[in-house]
Image 1 (tube, each protein chain N blue to C red):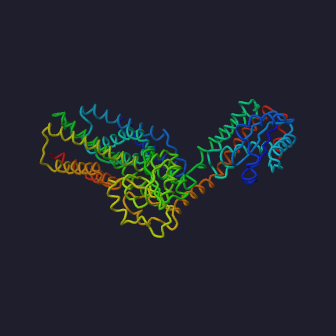
Image 2: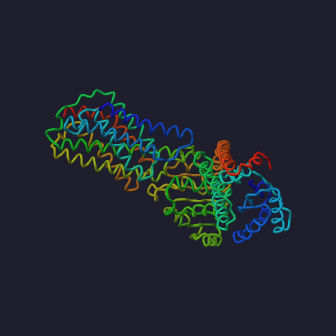
Length: 260
Length: 346
């Protein structure tokens, strides 16, 4: 059943992405419900998988890297479902779908050895880990908004906008969405740190320092954006590269986490 | 029963001729009354816009109806009316093309659909529309909607003003709280500013070498005049700069903009350079947050949109053809005896 849930999620995300690509290619893209519903079904299937895993493990289903990636992908999709309609970012689904799809494919390729009983001694550890992943979900969506910003800005600068230009949202809206998502991620990450301190997690390990660097980086990013020292373009580059870097280094953090 | 369409449009007659035959809104009911008085005409819808004056009539004797219409128009204008005319099925196809914007001066423009809707509503209110005309116009509205949603015939802006509005929208989103500065009070910058105002821009500052001209334009468009020597002082608050001065040298250079951009706290700036020779150094487009469009790039986008629209015409025509077939099917089922008229060319 768990495999079926993941397969369903993959099919939904693939449909959402494929449909948008086809519609854009044929020049018939209409912001509609199809992509949104496909994304919602994908997130629901992932939620189903995670609830099954949670029930069988009696813990938050983030016991190995594969589960962490699925949890992260689910968080990104969920945040998109909330943020997308609020900002009328119809095409954001098309940019989000490949990211969540990629995360899930990588998760499926990884061995699924669960660290049994990893969270049981302390629910604060579980809260800490879950909040961190949701925070990265928000940073992930900020990265998506940042990439959309860079594409749209490139279109505007080129003075020869292609068809996609008409479907992408205004850069001001993308910049606003990006800032809010970074704020959401930052607040969640701070709360996750607080939960970690309550759980008395090790504060001197490599995982701690890595997380602290990310926290400081996003704090500096927000401070610069609030002071008006950062243009939309720089914010987009910083938000996208920070998340991609964190994603690449996720297996390293996971290893450090296992050792801790 | 046959459907007759007769009239003149922008292709057949220049504006000096069209304006003589135009029917004003206040005269429409009287005109419809006269048209229904023509022998053989059972129902009539009259469409009068700046680009066309057309009659759509249901009639058993289309040629008699045409003569009557010609006479009425000639009496009104005091000159012979240069009319084209179509009967079923060509009249049906013509209306579907008109409502879809395929027969417009700017292909794919959507204003015509509102005008067709209004013409039909006026005729319906006056009791001048018969059942075939009701059915025909309601079908035409469906065709126009389908053409608009299933093709790209309305894609992209097609005038400098509308290109500027679209670009501003893609930079700022809503234009309601945006501030515009006009440097050089020329006609084209005035038109562009008006286009932006039509999309919600409320605050416009006009600066011109001749202050009186700036004041007069500012009064006309509800803006504020500023001495040309002081235009840089208003720069930190503006979002869109429309420049069309007669300056022989470039007045917007990276050196000049750099300190001014620092005051803007990273806010984007849209520069529309309509001047020839250009007011803005092209390299300012490389600056962070600055989007520069000159007259050529604006015109290029407008013509790009028109090209896309032209490429869509064939798809529109085949959609329309399907709908014409459907409508003729309905007519045959209701007026079987008259079906022999359908294939006859006007």
